[in-house]
Picture (tube, rainbow, N blue to C red):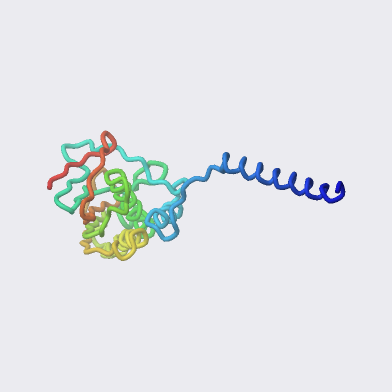
Length: 215
């Protein structure tokens, strides 16, 4: 009888240890940081931000509008964003005339940086970029030499970033302009009009940004 009970007791002890270990693991699960799902807007945005040199793929922190205007106005399901200038990850703005002071290649990067600031506004005001139904319209202004005619190459970079982040919903109508001077000497400015999904509302964003909403 003793020889028959000994294996049973050993097996019981092993089972008790296994149950105890499983219980301890269940009580102390590993802490996992939430990650954007593959193919999501947030995931695609992070990829673009990393490529542009933003640490950890995070959007820049915005300062509030300093003039007698708003960063955005919502009318119905449309959100009209004020123009944005290109700001590098180090906080410095890209300034200079294209192409004699700023190369076309650098101006293309600047256009993307301006779009990044617009997306940062959207994120701040909506809380969730999934509230964007589509990018409707973009106007790009390029501070240019009088004989420079390749402004569309610059704004193409902005359009490419919107499509990379929002997919087909990022395709938009567009106007490109060459201007003789830009505010504070910035190389590029980008305006953006956005259609929101039905029911989307602006979150409280003061004092980091300013907006108004009209039904």
